[in-house]
Image (cartoon, rainbow, N blue to C red; front, side):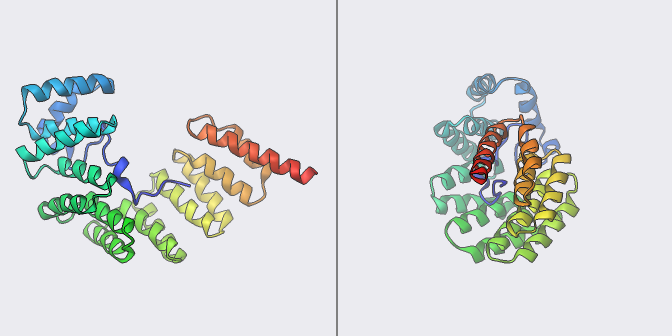
Length: 278
């Protein structure tokens, strides 16, 4: 099944899509990205280190260096860069998100909450901050608070997709399959070209035992290029008893890490076939 987006801490920071300000509104950020663009991650990290030495109070630069350190698994450097960025500019949103991410990983929910709240004080409609607070609430078992933050995110940005995906997962876990499906259909209407959304809708349908619907949604997600959707097509085919079709689907999967999982599912299929033969 697709990974729940209720826990976004490992995916908030991608070097090709730095959150959360509009990239064209931050010329300094664009200059930095242009300077390190096209380099490997180690090369970019070294370049950033040299840039930081030459510009030790540049908050945008420090925040981007923190993002790269975080992506590389160097949490100590990431923490140091984010702290320096916030010292230079207490309103640097990327540094707040990075610091919140590190705190949440360490289950320091008080610190993570403080960073997300600092972002909302500056931008009350900030989607990632509200998603982060929803995630923290859920991890603490505060389902009602998580739901409230997700609903606030949708109210703040009616075109919000991630908040609807998260709320759909939450509603399904609470036994509200119809509400979950409605939220996912809204998300698909907002972002019809995002295969991951259609893939998530298929997953909810399959878990609700609506197998034909699940297969239809998964196949649509494959056409939209959703990673991992082909595996889900095979899952739906197996649930419908279409073993030969599922085997063909699994054999055709070559992309990692899904190819390894497909191989394991083929072994399981063969083992089940052997038991039936016996």
